[in-house]
Length: 253
Image (cartoon, rainbow, N blue to C red; front, side, top):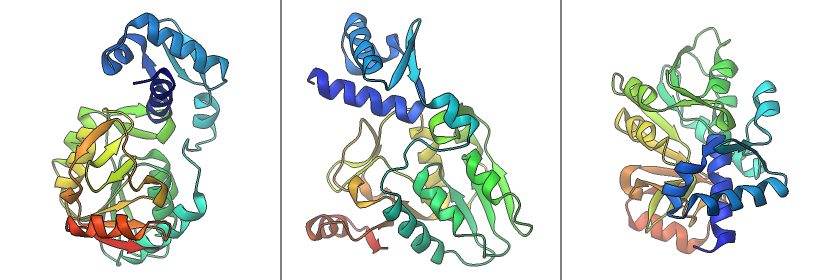
């Protein structure tokens, strides 16, 4: 992997997890710790991160957490359409899992006219958004706090989903590839997302068209782990056919 590609991957990881240790990045990217420090120094010079002893954290994290804002806010017009379309699939009295992320947050925003929903989420912002709906029952996992996605993750979060069963799950993704499958910038959420999939009768990936064909660092598994992908009309005909050939239904918002 070229240095520029590695720095881009490191930044994607920090934008997902909020912080990272030099030792962990060294093992993950199979390079020396001095090389990682050079990468972090360059990212700091570019204004993305702040280095600290033994690691670094995303520069925007403190203000972001205080304002309860998410890191990934690009392509919001596409995400808003996807959120509205996904919410149309939800009926009164449904039970749901809502994954963390900017697109799943758009799904949540469009659920407020529904009645008697049971919602399980690892996203603190979604819990706060829907927690005032009188007829909703909101359950939040435990786990480790991940600032960029305002979410809870780790083993405790994953175990929470082992105790439940719901009708529908709306899952975020870093990359959606017919060949490689579902991928994410980091490994920390993989266990949680697998547990979400296993807890739901129907699983919908909500991902804007810029994620289609993209491959991130950590693999969740093949694309047929899920039944549906809800995306926007920017998806190419070839990508749509490739996904459908794997048995995944594509819904265009």
